[in-house]
Image (cartoon, rainbow over all chains, first blue to last red; front, side):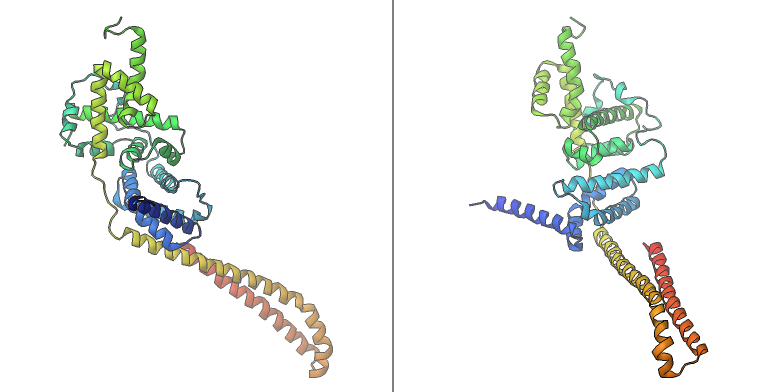
Length: 202
Length: 167
């Protein structure tokens, strides 16, 4: 006999699998159900990537158009979430490349080699501020980072994806994702310290 | 011994662990690496402080305000998808008709010869047609068949062009 919780979870999984199967047949209701399910996560990811709500909405729509067009070629053995975010990633990167011909890895104009410049035992004013839960300035600092760093931080900490899932979305080896996440966190730590020291935090 | 009170072997482990601190704070290490980091943190004050700082940073990242999709975005997207689906189906139908028209054009052309024979034999006798009338009938048949299919193809082509622009 199954507990109500297990039954609910199993029901949700079965229903999700049904939606994905129907999606492959080009069923509009299935696409609408999946859209409803992923709307906030997908929109948030796009917004973090392109930073403009109107562009994020446009890319959100393009992602679902692409999903509808390639639904027939979707391999159900693959995670749907990974597939969906991989489509979104490709569209966002294409958009950023068109808008910013410079490298997506580029740091801020003020950014020296922040990763290596991080003092390991600096007086931790940062720790104190973070403890006070002033996370708005963290969001502000993330928004100013390069697209590749913003992306890996969003996927890990907002979308709560595992490294393997991030690797699938970005189509990168696991080792590269680890390095990117490490560098992104070190860079963020360094940016926040610099901002604190120069009093640029609002 | 070095300046931190560690021998060279400890210092090597310390440097290796420092590289893992960010990933440990991000919660992505495997169980063995996590244990290795935790064991080191018990002994190393500098790493412990750095790990705590990184932990607060990742905590703040998780606590960020999560923007929500604007109201109506899903419905708007669904409408766009439905329109595209309709346009796709319409285009498929149009391709089918275009193919059918091409086949019809070829069939009518190929029918020329047997028809001409029919007109030349039984028809000319039954209706008492002159040579000029026969030529006119044959020319009209050819022109009607070709112009009809060409016109239909042009109308369909124009429609494809308009659909292509609106999508």
